[in-house]
Length: 259
Image (cartoon, rainbow, N blue to C red; front, side, top):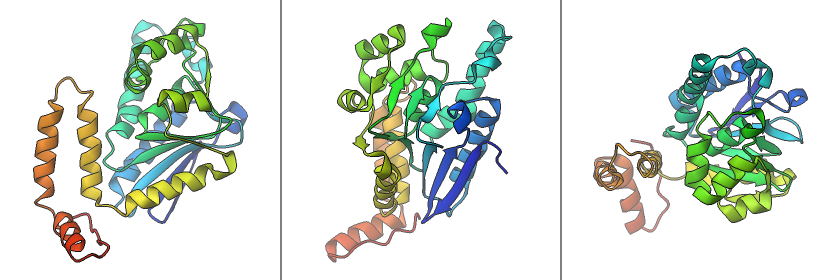
């Protein structure tokens, strides 16, 4: 089904591995299209509760876009490329009601940094490096990088990274708040799976509403507090709320059904 991805599911966790290690897993049109298909499958498949995105090989998560595809594009085509990628993949990941985390195993540059930032949070291997070096090509980030990097690490740091094109290492990314955890490479997927196993044990509808409410913080068209109030109220209509509160009173572990 996929030419550029390896997609597996175990224990309700889907792992998407971008599988172009000879190209440092660079994003091309095929990868973007297939990522969109894989995200659709994650969202629609009831057997999948959460997902991990990572890169094949020891060197790279995603080391940017396939620059050869840019050479012949004009202004209109460049804008269309960015809009299509945002709609097909990056916004879809960010708005997924199921948690999707990035396990960054190496270089996350350009579109790779943007892909990691579209995920709900990030875990990095110790050798990971992050950057938005598009200015070196006479370009800027086009897959949401100018927005998400600023949201995650603040305007000053984001502008410095984008305007210098400099990379930061995993320790700096942790200090900046770009990643949640830094672990040895051999523990990267174990850490990601452990976190998602814990998240998967919680109420799925409540998890989805946490994502939606947090996203509303950065949506100028929404009142985040109103989104929270509505989502909080909606939780009271779920069987999971009844199970969770009852289990708490009865001093037992809840068994959530996502209903």
